Length: 265
Image 1 (cartoon, helix red, strand yellow):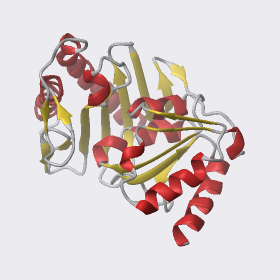
Image 2 (cartoon, helix red, strand yellow):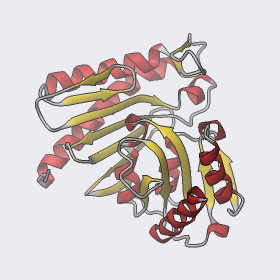
Image 3 (cartoon, helix red, strand yellow):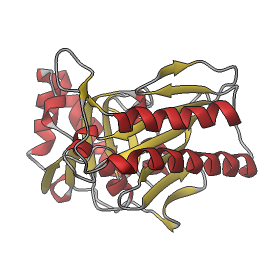
Image 4 (tube, helix red, strand yellow):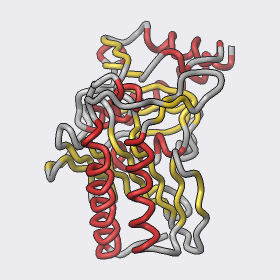
């Protein structure tokens, strides 16, 4: 859906209000002995009162200001709206980092126009960093972001939140094939790693098992900075799954070819 510059600016300003509301709910709990619940029966998938309070605050604002819009949130599920627009929310992407006191987490807010995410925001209230991506460009606190040129895998810096996400042999083989050829491999980061890619400090991120709310806000940030963020087969990553982000489009093309050849074996 085509938006006017004024409409996009209006939605961006509202996304920032959502980020402020989430930050107010989260800040009092960071680096405290906060209670943690496990949402999963098969693995440790933590959630805290900070997660739920932040999403509730954002949902209340959306219902009040854009009552016809839909909402997809990690904690509150799906609210189908009458409008094509859907706000996609992850109140704390990186809850494991949050409960261990590491500032490698953030609030993710995306606006999807019914076709694709057209606006993405990652807010880190502890460090005071706010990353925004749209057709206007990608920005960190008003400073334009640009990915770095890197067409050689041997010169690339690769990140992944955790190797545990490659729970299928096929996934692990693909990741290991790429990882053994890069200059540097680091684990951890969650959404923060994607913002570092948009900032020119990371070249490649390869992950699997993502949900729409894990990635939709990051797509506009990465791509407006000059990078690419897709599924492993090159299709849209907005529904999550196995994704790859590259700062350099040429390296992205090379890696899709390499990963395809490994998966075909």
